[in-house]
Image (cartoon, rainbow, N blue to C red):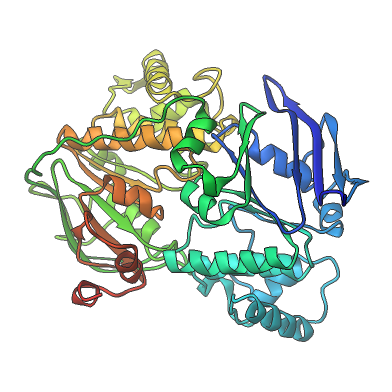
Length: 505
């Protein structure tokens, strides 16, 4: 029999205080689409980093086509035919598509020759892309195409994809899947990481499940329900978020023709956004990344001040108020970017709890910071939201992405906001933690808060939203009841078809 394309045997990698991978073994055949599943902190990222040469295993063996494979750096892995598309794109906004791709190649040809190759490959794989376009002008889906094409130009034998659909519309997901199936048919193996289990069921031939760094099972996704896979990942029964049946109350937040410039040259200005959000209501806002989500959150948080009569909380014009004043009133926000925006990376969890909780949690007395109270608040967040960390003294950057996300959302929820605006609340979070965060948001609404959830996870929005609207090029569609909306209708709304155009789909 022919050896597998890639075989991992007994891979182990430990860091101080944690074993990230513990005796992990798996095989991937040529042309196989293999899913790697697990909770946040299960060891997925460490495993693929070892395959890609970013991390060196403490013990164990990797073989490619039966030959010992131990890349000391990504360049060596790429030379052996391993390509990787990361969850966070590594692109320069001010450069063209061709220039960005050239930067990621070892021996890039002249730009003219490279541009021709980009055009040929992009058309051959159904990912049309102009090599001359400036990356800063591209949508999130087009940026992902740049990363994929950069890999394809190096003729990979194994393509690793980390959360590849988190910023795509349903229509773009279908395009991506067609491309991956074509690659698979040509013999390229794909190692696919995603928390979207229905996508795993539709695309992947097999799956390996990790829990606490160990392989705990394998399955055939097409023959396994999403719920069963999720429960294999967490090792327990998965709780489905529940919502009380209530009639929304009075208007708590109202936007009246909100306009705002983007602070970034490649950002998206907000254009005449008008919407009301009521007490007890969850308004879901979908949209492809880069269509004004960050700008909307900044306008609601007070990081970007608004002209008079544009942002109202109850009967007060809060447009001219900054974040601290809005928090004091009860308008709280949690941005998408965890490290650097929602949390200061090198500060402890106690210090990060103080940053946004000082006013509402009474953590300041007579101008002095009350650190014992801040520590108790951080401990309360850690316990209530099951944040996996040795303690509140640990730095924010020491947490996995999912655990930091739980801390950030928990910090805001526990401050009892009257209005909470969250951007990507479960981004990169495993099924169990995502369910807990969604339940916390639903509980908040059930207790009378107005909740706005900005997300690219349409399943999430349909699960928890009372009404749904879409952002496209800085404009917000008319909100519609979430119940009964079809994927096609949602996709059209996200693509810019607003109002009556969608109603006649």
